[in-house]
Length: 262
Image 1: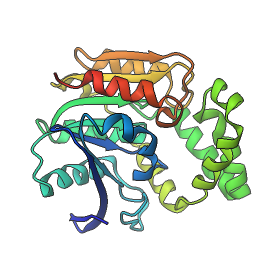
Image 2: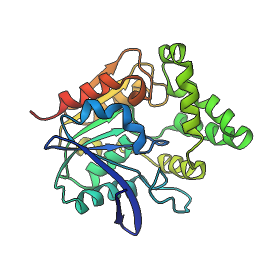
Image 3: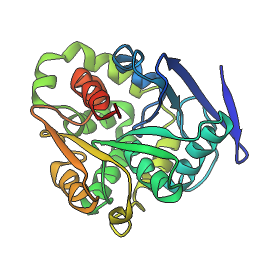
Image 4: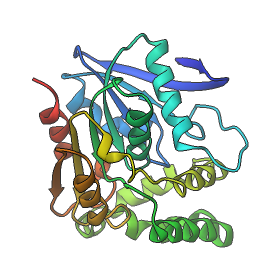
């Protein structure tokens, strides 16, 4: 299993694929590298895929802290590119990973060739803060069962919930495997996210993807990103919720491939 020592932390990563261009996939908040499994067959023929677990995720370090800063996660991602001698990568950030990606391109200009932001936030507003509080309270009062029940409406579309009851049980099992104390640190880091002042300074191609049933990182946030980032593109997926890597695999992968430089 490949690990990189970056800034005193052990960071887990995986590589696959056959393309010449490096595509760095940045995880959602409760994801690990495993979370991209359904996307791999669509993307591997086109890209050298690089996946990593952030601090607090999967097989990377879970250091004790009040929070994990998004800027630190961005620096770790850039440090991984340094160790692998990758000068530039195409960044795809989903949800939490999209926020990290915004910090990456702000802090490390020139290291990303282009940026694909999927189901993410320009800033963590008060609604997002209350959602995080509700998940933390649910876990405290009812453990995994209540936390998962509370989170379901925020994550999935109506269509998906109506037709994938069996999969929800499997996803609950995966949710029970996360280090919840580390997830709380990740949530606390998100509370500080506000990229609105420097998004207009970005100078690289950017594409924004959002499901029109995404309640967690809703359409108004995607439109805010679109309005702030110069010449960004915006794509809205009808009938899709937040977890695009599960319920909109083909459309998500197609968007990534189509936005790739020719």
